[in-house]
Length: 180
Image (cartoon, one colour):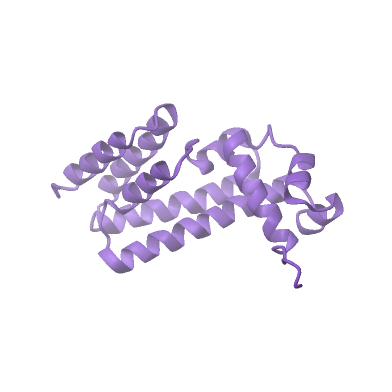
């Protein structure tokens, strides 16, 4: 009988870290818990990620990659519809537990980590670039919409009401002069 194969250790580590960092927080998630839940040896974790900071950076880079792929997929289907990031957040809320923006959360916990700050900046630059394209190059409007988007994450972290997403999406469309 063939034995079930496990995902490679690096993938299990990242998946476990993603789930724990997001739900519990980075500081509240110890390496031992990740090792236990990923079912790997501590040496394996340190082989792939020599420090917790490097694991956090890999977690953020992985999340950014997943988000960018989803964003690009929607852009290919819908063009630069200003509602896309709001719709993606709505899907996240519908899927279950919501603990806020993982990039903001990481920056809050590790504000002096240059690699973490760099990953957060890459994510935010991509978002601002998207909003700028959606706003037809109007940088001031893109920053205003980014402010609405940032505020939505905080609002939903405090009260994960999907109606807030609808309201923020409508506000972004009004700001851009594109009702409905």
